[in-house]
Length: 239
Image: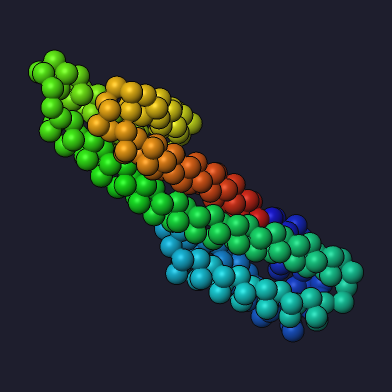
């Protein structure tokens, strides 16, 4: 939109209308500030949320805003004032999109941390379940069944991590669906674990909670990723 507003009449033409000799410098600077803002925006979007890059975008936007305000102050022709006001509205929309993107990336980082904590907790619980199953008393057939139950639960958890990594490597509707479905499969397995493996009764409930926390963190990441994409599309349109 910012580019579209600039092109609406053409800043060179606009400069001629509002006193070329005194205003072309300000107009050229505004064009330069817009170019710098667009370059910083692109670098930020390619950085996957690097906050230092976001700060650079904000600084470039602030410079653009200051130059924009300066032109609004010295413009008197109604058509030029209208053009600059439209551009100011587009700039405000760009700021809102930038704020949304930065907040969404913060949520993503927090969700990734929560996923790591929950996954590590779940793995530790499953390892305990496996050790207890291997040490369980009983005849060979009974111990084999207990080992199979413990191993099956660990396999389901490993599949969760595999599906989640697949989603993080390739954000698509299919990989998202596969990851979330694997959580449901694993939770169904855990739901009957205490019945199939009495020695796991103490770990079954905290394991269920850890896997659900892992799933909830992934859902937060998925939602925030969608917000990042929406904000990115808006920023491309706005500048």
